[in-house]
Length: 206
Image (tube, rainbow, N blue to C red; front, side):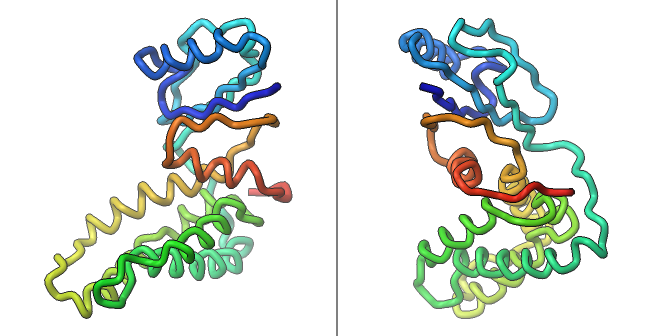
């Protein structure tokens, strides 16, 4: 069986408690092939010795930060409008306008799945040109309208939040290895990865 082992910044690019646990898991199941899929910052490389049931050429390192290939305006404008509609729905679900509402989890899940199974130009390139910040500010304005006790949102706060969320969403652009089953260490970006990896997507030109 081919098992995808999803981690963040740990095995096999860094030593520590999580990496030690991963090594115990892999060496304890020698009859199965493990394919590490690891979220990294930008340029980290494999640092640990790999057991026999981990093929070095199948280790998948996915950078979260770094340069993004720009998307040509004429090519990306229609997709940018479609992306904007989804981002508007996403942030409205997170920051509801109705007083005392805790958000719309069903809507959030629906939109997140659409984003992580994106069809068209690369999501990272689109988000670089059409980031979340405007939709965060708009959603917070509506959210705070009936809840004046909420703090004002600064431009710096919106930019920081948008930057982190957009980079997580851009992970949907990654090329995923073929595995029979996935072992996901915890929730977070890795959950989005599995939605992206599980969906069928056409090849992207950007």
